Amino acid sequence: AQSVTQLDSHVSVSEGTPVLLRCNYSSSYSPSLFWYVQHPNKGLQLLLKYTSAATLVKGINGFEAEFKKSETSFHLTKPSAHMSDAAEYFCVKEYGNKLVFGAGTILRVKS
Amino acid sequence: SQTIHQWPATLVQPVGSPLSLECTVEGTSNPNLYWYRQAAGRGLQLLFYSVGIGQISSEVPQNLSASRPQDRQFILSSKKLLLSDSGFYLCAWRISGTGLEQYFGPGTRLTVT
Image (cartoon, rainbow over the protein chains, first blue to last red):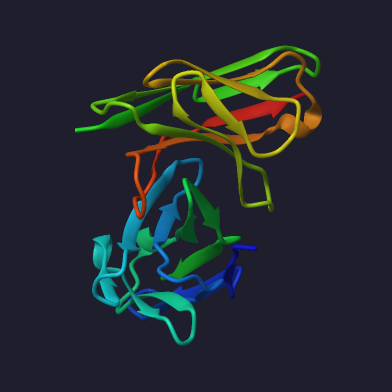
């Protein structure tokens, strides 16, 4: 079965420090992977996507993710956290016409 | 550019009452359309998706139904709401094809009392 595992349900960082949100996916030949962000009571916004091009993917708001096939991972990073980054983040894999979502990671940014 | 609308934004309904949530997409033709529910602590659950007018696939048997009367309109309904239907309902669209992202609407917060 297709699955996406986000290894941390909550991550807390200080403003200005790096962010790492971890994601592993069930293996498939050529996966399409995404990261979405959701602020409270809002819809999901696409941060970035990987579709078999460069393994390091740059997204909006300074986020990037690295696709590692050998580790079946797609971790999300940002060099310096901002207060506005506090939100819930979802790692997502495409499967057919549908998306498979991870359980989400809530990012808290401390001042 | 494409935009997606959902209404209402919030809704409080008693148990046993009917439900109709509407989603419309502008600026694209023949999109794939999706309904998701997000309940506290349960992540996003795909409820229905549609690849064309009148074509509905149900992912989870439940108290809800969906219809697509027009190319860019997707409606989520229930004849009698249950307490367990409470949640945040999200509509999404994407272009037909593979490897393509979905774009989400602003959501409807439904509370069944």
